[in-house]
Length: 233
Image 1 (cartoon, rainbow, N blue to C red):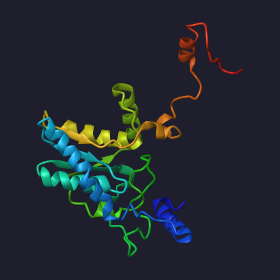
Image 2 (cartoon, rainbow, N blue to C red):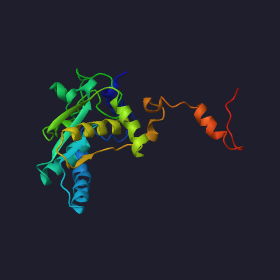
Image 3 (cartoon, rainbow, N blue to C red):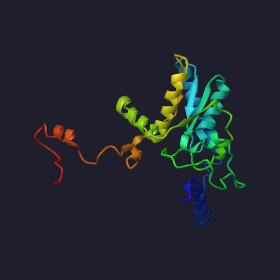
Image 4 (cartoon, rainbow, N blue to C red):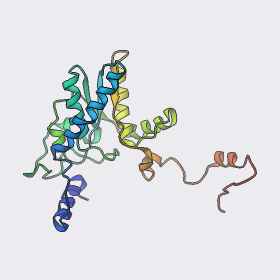
């Protein structure tokens, strides 16, 4: 009911009630600094090992740690690299130009007025994380993800490329594909697909797949005589 802001408030309540450690992943500088020390160097070193430059780095955001940390490192090592930051078209918080109101610790004070529900789980809560806000300006371009394309692209990756990623991975890949359409021929594009598809079995990503075998699948099963799981009457 409280959306992402309520999630943060609930975590605070539980930590205070039970004496638990609260990570403050949306606010702590340790978040983006870890990606500065690890993710960014890994990308640059891998490309350097094959003698390749990096033309575009494409990322969405949840906390903003990957975009901020890896993006900062990449820009320092490769200033000509263009950083593309994507967010849902239905929740274009950054694109709205409206800042998030905050508590003294940097956590959100209230829900962002530009937020609307969107299907990209793990992306874009109903506030601009402080970790993300501190990195804004690194991006060279913003891309808005239309409704529907995240699931479609994720399914296409599984079907055509054998890459099983989640809805947010599909969103990032869609942004990378759109970037590639405008990029000069031969450009090198890195896109972050940080999750795997099996985490999304109960989501719209798999809604088009029936739990039981369809007639085509049953026909294949019946093509040999044994171990056929016939549907119950």
